[in-house]
Image (cartoon, rainbow, N blue to C red; front, side):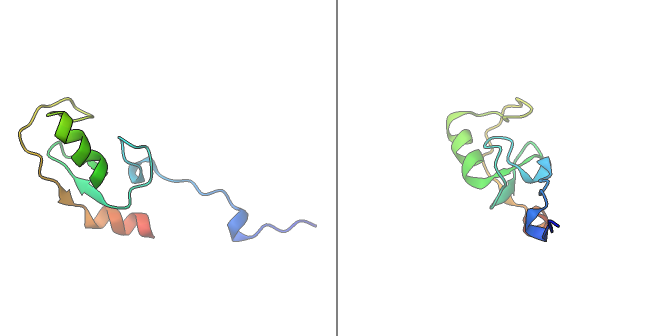
Length: 77
């Protein structure tokens, strides 16, 4: 008889936990001017080169991002 442990179960990662730029699970999620959440390093690097949202294409001069504490807490669960 084969037993399956908790480790053997496939883990489904919600897309909302993945950065739209890197497609990886975010460790430092931030909220950008376009209302979307990104990995901090990915969006900061992107905005140094581009002045628009990678999702919506909306242009901006604002490159300030804000920590998304709730998203981080949900990812860490």
